[in-house]
Length: 547
Image 1: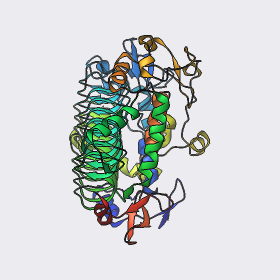
Image 2: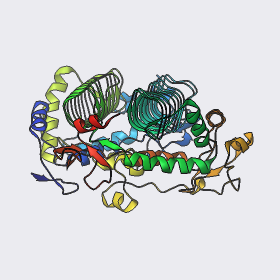
Image 3: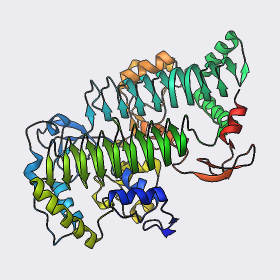
Image 4: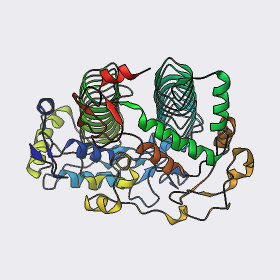
């Protein structure tokens, strides 16, 4: 057992971790698993966007970087274009100075990509979106259309205020739903349609306030009902008023809490520990991952293997990734962020189609580079062992970038979603905190939002609203107003950030607890802590309880 160098909690390096580190020729981490993930997430801004100027073209752009950011920021087309060359910022490695100090100087010099929007149409105001159309204020989106205010979405259409949904259409306020159609406030469900305020359904349709059902039609409160009874209840629930929506949502929370809960939400897995794992095997302390194997301490993995201490790898799959964040289609990567289709990369950021590079930023189609300077193969292979020995002498080798090198404040990053902290905790931990912009907290231009969607006028899209929780301003777009009217849903009274926060608060932490099954009393590991009020069952007992 060792004491974490960041939080002082005791932790143990598992045999799998030790073997992985030996294969990568790096020392085992001196910080615990949660602190490793927190550090990786603090380097990624997934949700916060700003208006600013492109430093190359002087055009107005949407960016993950504030206007007062110390970094040079280019709009996406310019950053990926041919009007600049990242190799022009190359420099010699200085063995008289720490590596991270030299890297920080390069980081300030090389231009950064404004936002990650790729091959998408009418979707500029998003973050990390690919091959999508008509999406707005969403993050981590792939091949979606008309998706608004949502997070981690794949192959969805007409979905609003949702997270972790796949292959779904015409859904609102849904979480962890695969194959949903015309659903409202549905969670942890698959292949279900016209289901409302329900939890853990599979292959169901026309269900209201129901939980843990399989292949059921026309159910209310887990009991059969007629089509007429269902339609009458649906009309009452979704009557377009915000006052009734709040009551319906609160009742859903009560129904959800009283349901039997499976200890973890893993499906078709072998020899795994973690939560929300699908078609995975030989995984230890992993979460939100698909079709992967041989991984330790990972969040968000897709078709990848041999991965340890990583936030987001895959799409397409990766192999051999250590202590890195946002790696796509790459192999043999360590201590890096935003690497695409590359191999043998160390301590680098935003490199595409590169091989054998160290300490580089913003390179494309390059090989044998150190601090953005070109070397021959022989020169590179002779210099790298010397650099590693130098980093060992400074205590840097084997550690991820220090938090001072994160381009973002802690409360701008995804770390605030998964590991929320207040300002004092952030500052005491050595991170930066971004104060709120008072210009975003002006008085609303209307005294009251109409309670009933049928009383909302078209002119509301010209109004400035104020969140009932945090007072932050927000607006209603023409696209979302059309969705609310079609679904007979009220105008939300909270800003998108608070709605996102509310959804996250319903998610279990990225942590497993030792506890007993409340059915058979055997020892289990679960993402529900022992102090939680829900009835938590092992997989065998849970399956017996499903109707």
